[in-house]
Length: 164
Image 1 (cartoon, rainbow, N blue to C red):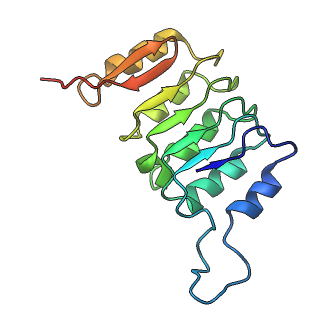
Image 2 (image 1 turned 45 degrees about the vertical axis):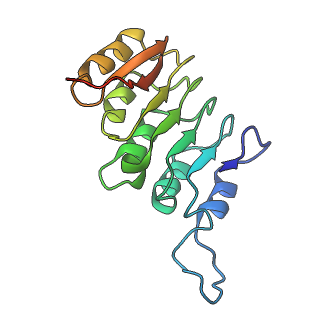
Image 3 (image 1 turned 90 degrees about the vertical axis):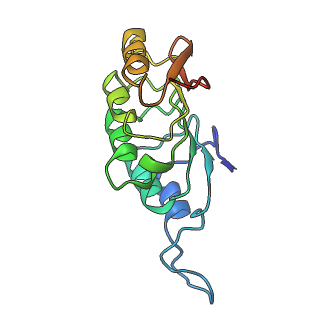
């Protein structure tokens, strides 16, 4: 787990340095792998990052399963499209995503998140452009595949109940 929440002045350029494979290879080190290759949990709340950083994450963090992007003002539906694109490692590995307070994402992101088969928790609280109706439609649309429940307004969790 790496927690970089609210680190002042951490932007895409620093994220690129952090996420990209090292330029100086040492014996026994895979020159194509990021230092964060095996990281499973990444907290980036409140950072000024864009799709550039998210694209690097999908390429260089194949084990990532918990991602906190809450209060990241530049996260958009396009950002979610990067994370859920066919061939993206995060599409298959993400189990939890926190997008609370991301004011640029819309109901469209819910259609994209449906492509992540291992998601168990989606936090969309304080996302002004996400409607409660769209959350309810997602829950109903996934009822036969992966039953979800609305714990509270815009907080979705995979139901522990077994379907018949």
